[in-house]
Image 1 (cartoon, rainbow, N blue to C red):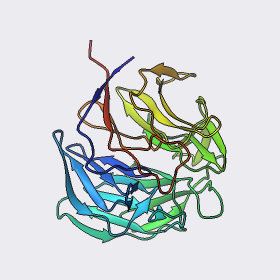
Image 2 (image 1 turned 120 degrees about the vertical axis):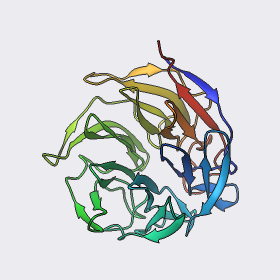
Image 3 (image 1 turned 180 degrees about the horizontal axis):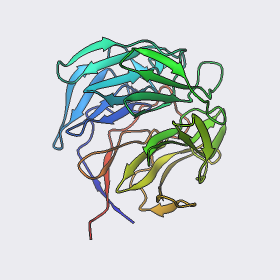
Image 4 (image 1 turned 45 degrees about the vertical axis):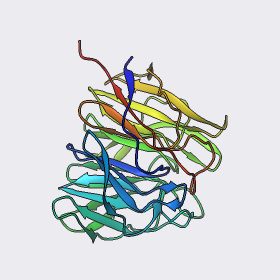
Length: 291
């Protein structure tokens, strides 16, 4: 199910980066490249990539969320190291200026973040010692972080989306173990429940597209391979189904919704390299033709 098309390449190769869609454009932020940490922030308007600003500091494995006309770049590891930061940088899309928000409750990188009901939820990740189950939420109205129900277990490099009004945390890893857990968060009850599992993986992408949840690529540490598989979960389904595979297998397969398609932007073709991978410039678009 579905088809793929090659799209204009990034200006710089990236891995362990963040990608967001503002509706009218895609932004690629941070990560590592052939020359170390990538500071240039690239914007894609549907025709070409341009550099629109630079990150205040080099980061690998940050999370990024668009909320209220701003891009929040949350945590990550400093440069190409495994030293985490609690920093939250905020890019105002209208003024094209950077500011700061309240720092994370504790430094972390390799986490996931989503926006739900005007707040930013940050899930999992790790510090220089261990992976985390922490679930922190940021309220822009008060510029404060608070703690919510933790993930069912500690994990780094999960993918997260809002699907059917609930947060889905998909896969992840800790040390040399990959997980296929899918955890579902109900904000009303502040609790997690178990969802349909996937084959274990980390550093994959996830997007809600045409009413279904899709997972893209990633990495299997057990087999030492980057992945090109694409899986689809329909509402109410108890099992994931295969969709058309990615043309280029990649870990850190950052995926976003843009112009009624899913765009998988950058990522590394080499398994095992995390904080300082050279990354790739590959951009591929996944779409399902309307009947």
